[in-house]
Length: 510
Ligand code: HEM
Ligand SMILES: *[C@@H]1O[C@H](CO)[C@@H](O)[C@H](O)[C@H]1NC(C)=O
Ligand SMILES: *[C@@H]1O[C@H](CO)[C@@H](O)[C@H](O)[C@H]1NC(C)=O
Image (tube, rainbow, N blue to C red; front, top):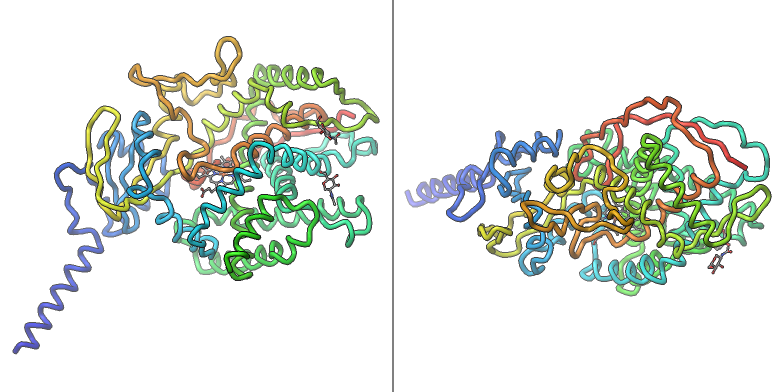
């Protein structure tokens, strides 16, 4: 008899446990944000979220206002859609809102990489040293060296003055990826290649192959991150990962010339901490991914907008010419290649505004933190909400602020001077409800996880545009072609990609 009762209790416990896991028992408690569990048990809204994050969050915002909790794949996410309240999200102590709890399983699934306890600290230290300040001077030189190898190796050889046709997205992503990769991971070693010319040729050939493989992984990435790959895609991802771990193995990378301090020091730190070599190989791929997945696509949109908006093109071209003139440099036949330094890149407010406007339109990360313990969240207008331990809190600045017509009037239109004051300086004053919006555009995220590569990335894109403008004539094949739509499957993952490429032609001017 007693055993039957025990069995009954066990059964009831199982059913309750299952219901709990499926989310059926979750109720909105007093003081919590509106709760919307979605149509499916456990999965909640994940299908609609994944289909088009922007549309979905807009719908939720219209329904619930600027804070609400939704169920997504077994987790509860509270979205804050009021940009004036972003500060409270960004600045909350890590003891309450922490990113690593959320990021760790994702990094493990996507890269099979298991971080060290102090992983993030090492990343931040090296990034501050090598991707900012004086370190950036070195990186800018390395980037320039590699851009010139990829873009200008035929200058003066006289055989490339004919028009070449290409897809603008493929072209921009290709060049910026390869030059960025070479600048960070170093060049083919001189001593095994024999001479510099051979080494540079090997750099061109091998980086092309790497880019080709990277794009395959890139295209599978959204599905991989959501954990919805089909069986053959899963095989393909495994194969690609092995390939990258091999090409980017510690052994191979460390034998290269000109390897950046950013890569070298992080490798050294992890070796010193006793991380095994196979895991450090995997970390190399994490670094490649983090550093190369966004810059190329952003450079594409930047060039495309310049070509679609002649007024912007004129303004940027004038500025570029002026900067060159001020440093006494002229691009001419048979002359030496221009030396574009970081200092020159600090004198380009028009290009900066054009870049910021581009990123406002096409950079759309979801920023997520885990709630470490029960807490209350205070909105800018004073409303308070309770958040539960174990839930997630997220912001999606693209919908919440970058496309808010009150903050950025006529938000769907590209305006190259949107981030310029009337006297030509950087504009930082934007308002909503008469209040100043500090976080008026967030392509790089914010707070502890803010992109540590943002200054380098900005420089990479500027250098690319600089070289395009000074060494090439280029134009859209069909000047009337519309700017393509954004591929909605990538919302939430950094810089967006277009649904189709745009044909253009280019030729060396010299
Ligand atoms: C246009 C180009 C880029 C964009 C739009 C971009 C954007 C972002 C965003 C939104 C994040 C996540 C922020 C968060 O979760 O709060 C991030 C993280 C990161 N980015 Fe970038 N990024 C770009 C280029 C780069 C480059 C060139 C590098 C390195 C050279 C880089 C290195 C990283 C790293 C290492 C992280 C992880 C930071 C962390 O976990 O704390 N990024 N980036
Ligand atoms: C290493 O970098 C320097 C300076 O950027 C460059 O002159 C040199 O050619 C590079 N080495 C190789 C093997 O490309
Ligand atoms: C470019 O200019 C900087 C600063 O003036 C100088 O330090 C550097 O050596 C120059 N590089 C080349 C390749 O001329």
